[in-house]
Amino acid sequence: MSTVQEERLAAQAGGGAQIWVRQLWPWVVAAILAILAPTVFSSGHDIHMLSSMGIMVVFALSYNMLLGNTGLLSFGHAVYFGLGAYIAMHALRYTNDAVLDGTGYGIPIELIPLIGGIAGLGFGIIFGAVSTRRAGVVFAMISLGIVGLVEASSLAFTGFFGGEAGLFGDREDVNSLFGIEYSRSISVYYLVVAWAFIAAVAMFVLRKTPLGWMANAVRDNPERAQFVGYNTQMVRFLQFCLSAFFAGIAGGLFVLVEEIVTDEAVGFLLSGEVLLAAYIGGIGFFLGPVIGAILVVYLESNLSAISDAWLLYFGVLFIGVVMFAPMGLVGIAFQQWMNFRSGGWRGTLLARGYCTAAALVALLGFICIVEMSYHYLRSWNPSQPMTLFITDVNVTTATPWLISIAIFAAGLGALLFHAKPMLRRAADTAGGQQ
Image (cartoon, rainbow, N blue to C red; front, top):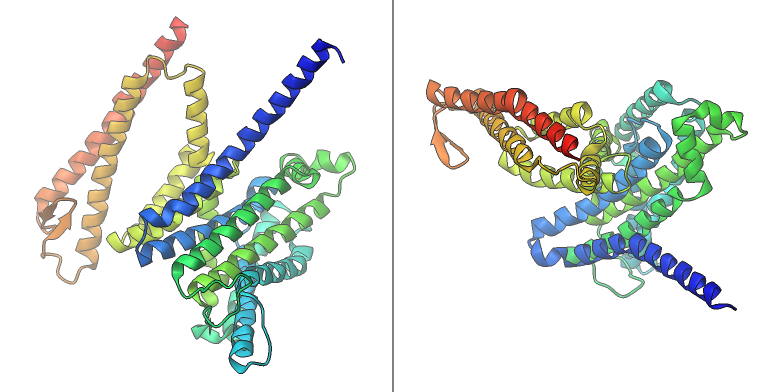
């Protein structure tokens, strides 16, 4: 072999190694962060929150297989999460009885999420055979009808669903493949992390398969995909079933963390929550639903303890993303990063800082108005002073209202009439100098 050929093969090998490094380092970083997270968030509440984040990450990624990859807007994805959770709970209860009675070994706790995944796949085949015949609005309406049907059934068939009280299980009275004691929440968290990584890697690999590419083709141009010989209904059906499988895994993990499952697990609220998580994060990116899930769970766990208006903030955030950032938060970050690398930030740092400051001022005023409104309308004694950030205010007087409205108006006015034109002029000047 000649020296030139050896150098060419060495260069190809080096390029292949670089590709592997670029693909693997995000997973390595994510694994390190997940392993070290309990050292920073060490309280019982925080460990439970981290476990809930892992569950929502799997759930949101499974939903993105429909919306982001295949273009199927579902309003009832919680059906497969919840039904998988119910089957997993029955498996957990069976194992509890088997262990306590000494009649059998039962199912190892590490495999119970897989039971939920298989259940989600089974129900995905049943409901997907009907709903994936059509796409677009028809599919969305069918999914809405299915979630209503299943939620109503959860209160009617009490033998399976447990009625309004739901079903309970005990993760302590279960055998383990590795002899691990799961009475501590930190052990359950690491089990959630293990399953979350397995599911995330599997869904990432599925995106790179011919089925994943065809799902994108069906999403972008179903007529052309059908014209070249692909069965678009079968592609939608397969993606739907696989999505239901991973949603069922998330439901099985939910059972191990909460040790209870109720009708809320198959309801409209959870279906809307996973839609929020996926869309806010960014359905066009694999990382988008991950970031969205972490953000939604964090706000739900902490913001709800701080403010009664947390649902209103959720709604405003979702509306803002839909109207001004349809690519999601990850899409914004990616767009700005590419703009920065291409030199688009040159000469605009001052204007960007001014825009950010104006937006924060407007946000401060908006939060003040909302919090005072909730206190005035919902408090049993509105004249009692409330703590607003670092000061106590009386919402029955005009002064705090005038100050809050002035702050909001000043920030919004500066953003719309001064900061944005300033940023545009700075960008035009920087572009003219290149």
